[in-house]
Length: 146
Image (cartoon, rainbow, N blue to C red; front, top):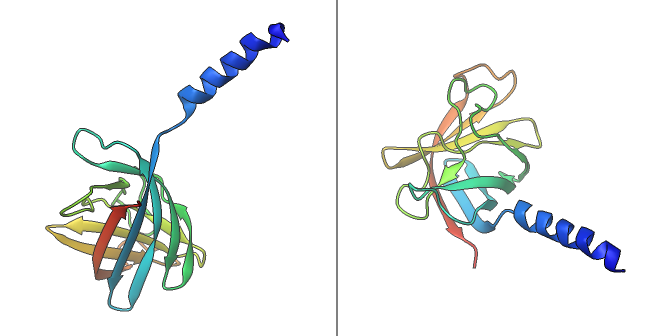
């Protein structure tokens, strides 16, 4: 039994150092014929600018399930060259100018973003022609889950 103790301790140490401290959030936005909401998982602590990195997303938009978070540093299909950063802050203008992106189960993509104190959703659908998506002003809010 003693021979296995060093291996068990090494595995425990490896697991402890690879776990990411995360926080849960509840988010939603609404606009003309648009209602989206769900949950985020973010880094537990903000970066030096007070921004939290969104690590995962779940929820729905107009009753359609969210399938995946768009990777930071990439644009949703049909919205090049506008790359998402998947960052959020606790208060004020919560969305960055790049915003976050996600795919829906029906094949459409959304990119809610902030600009000058306003929030907007860019909706891209097939054939994903850059700049041809629909922009809708939305009211966005997010808070850390209790």
